Image 1 (cartoon, rainbow, N blue to C red):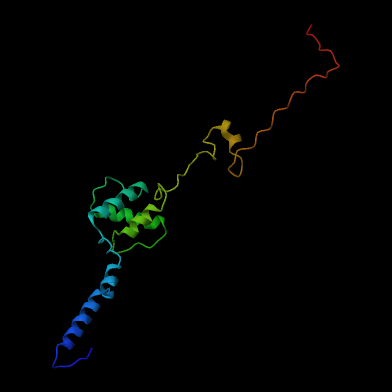
Image 2: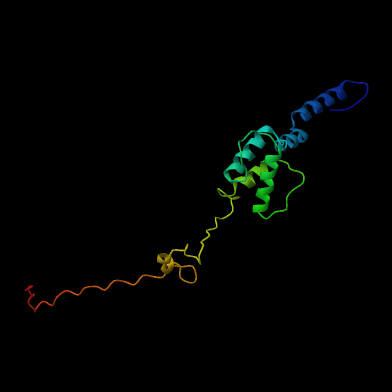
Length: 161
């Protein structure tokens, strides 16, 4: 095939080249189709509700789940961060990552451990309870009762008189 400006052969070659190139996959389209979907924007109604449900489960949030990022929700997040020994964030953004972080913790995470207080030296003033509060905070181990030995086989049983 000879390309000349006088004939139509260059037009045929160009048409063949265009058709050939049109059949090849476009790399620009493939790259754009492989990008991950955009993450949901922070502080959406659904995300706030999910975070409030998790904060309620963790015993950080008091009250009802209303889907609003109000002072109660902010205080609950600060309580969670304090329990997790993390510095509180000034810019509170409810994201999917935060919700996943909340879901990773066990129930009642924000509830402080219960403290049991006794008056009167640890026995509640009841002297009968003194044996149960040994030094060290553990009750004493009870002694095992003596085991009765069975009578010997060759000895006759005695009858009461």
